[in-house]
Amino acid sequence: MKFTSIVLASVVGVAAAGKPQLSISVQDGNFDGLDGLNPTLSWENSGRAGDLDISYGVEANARPTTDIASLPRSIWGKASTDISGWGVSARADIDAQDLGRADLQLDASNDDADLSLRLTANAGSDFNVRAVEATKGLDINGARVTVRPRLDLENDSRDVEVNYSSGNSNVRLTASADNQEVTVSQQIDDDNRIAPTVNNRGDISVEWERRLSDDSSLTANLKPNDSLDLKWRDAAWTANINMPIDGTNINGANVNIKRDVTF
Image 1: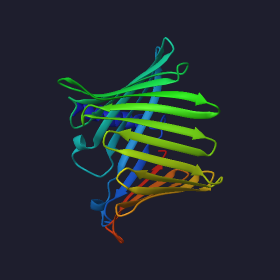
Image 2: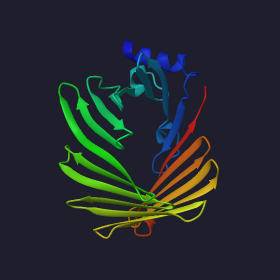
Image 3: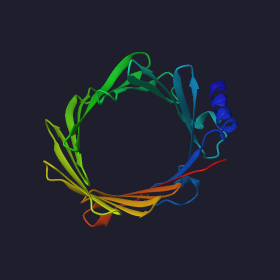
């Protein structure tokens, strides 16, 4: 309880130094009272401690409650520094209701080698590595190529992602023992981008992004007989709508609305 109170006091006391973000979700079209909403307040801030760049934040339940211990949902912290030409960072995410366990993400990158590494793990009573990946970049005749091998130890899966980018075109290939997927993204003009995706099982999806203004855009992603996802961004507002599709039927909708709010 003491730890929880300190976290909440920090959010209120230094909100002016950061920018809290309030998000509200509406599940399955239920707009009746607070039961249909999922208000969340997130806040973050940063500073410097010696040679370390420090950032930290908290996500809390914004719904009225008499149980103050239930308000914080997650707490995170990140430390970054440079070591012999490598940019190194470590981030920990903690479930506020389970302080004895943390999700860890360790990153290292070297600009001269055009190489980056990432390790994700769980830490608590023991230390378990969940996934490892590397990204190597290459510049070839004006085109940009990145190769990203990935190892998922939790699901015992391995794959490789290759990205090729040249001018207004981008091709992404993801290949594993069980699945191969290709996405071709094309910038049609200044305001429109289209990106179809197909995999070896014959599944097809299409993403279309439309720029409405300098700070406004609409992105639609259609997966036939699966879902239609819409993302509308307008300055500080962001709205995400997910609509499951079964044939020609839309089975409800999940709506998430966010905006930056300065207190």
